[in-house]
Length: 429
Image 1 (spheres, rainbow, N blue to C red):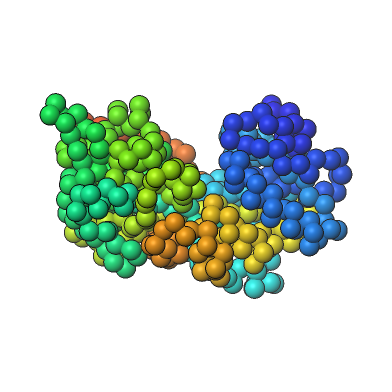
Image 2 (cartoon, rainbow, N blue to C red; image 1 turned 180 degrees about the vertical axis):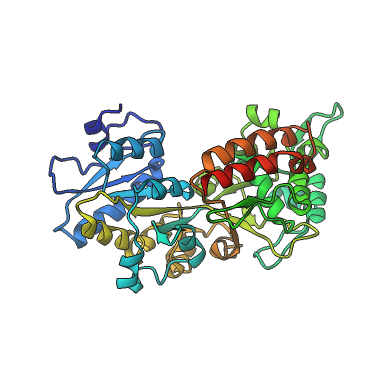
């Protein structure tokens, strides 16, 4: 098991993490557990430092995650050493079912202003079986970045600037084809589209939802999947065909050897699907001029959607410092914490006031289509929340890989995978 003191004192032994300080042996200190890349960790440190100044009566100790934060949480909590404040993801339902997370619902009802400014779709993500297990701190949905220079050189009009200005699958494909460049030997020197989300089956699922399909019903605590229904399958197939049939995107095999982020950063991809977490990376690339746009809508869809990717802050059910932990959660998701997040350029805050603040606008001066970010939470569909998600996703991955590699069409989902997943959901009910 990982050495606890090394974690508490921020030993830099894990890739993608940094030491934050706050080390000490005060048994009464509030322990805050999170995972973050170095730049994000520095923002979280500023929020913690501001909390320390505002509440010097509450000492804070940072516990920085290793490479598998969810297993680490289970290990610590099973050993009676659960951190007081826990960073959570959409996969929190397993922790709620196991009794790891404290229900924040009564605290919010006693203090309704604590969540009043938080985007309702994000907050709803953390409501499960009558409880509220975290308050959201950011929106982490996906959308499209596009290279404005490549669009101009190809004579293509700029894509939509807001979620209400949809473009169709056909328009998106036409644009991607116009922006794909091949040499005489058929080798691709510039892709029209690339996907940088490390879970392409989720990207394809969003295309399915943007064609009017339901991935899971209901999304929170689902009882059945819609992957076998025609609208979802057709949208999923459209995504797969971008690489398999139309060759405007790298194939699954190509993507394993070529980074979509590098392709976009070097001007070898005109559009890339990823999230706000790449914004600071792209702004740091010399000569890269880009903006953001929304995902396309299929013939059976109505409005463009992203996904409700989010992280939140919860409180351990076993914490003896729930009152102090609640004060920290309210601070980090409240005006000061959210304004610091907004001004960093590293997060899309969960608080409505912060996402529409001058600080957020100033941090995103490199783009014009700010409404793609500010309107993201309200135009997103939930990623499924289920305690059985690990098993469900494993089955979905096996089925999806066949389609994404061109070994089967997406209408094959109805022949077996949908029934298998429905069975897993019934077993977990």
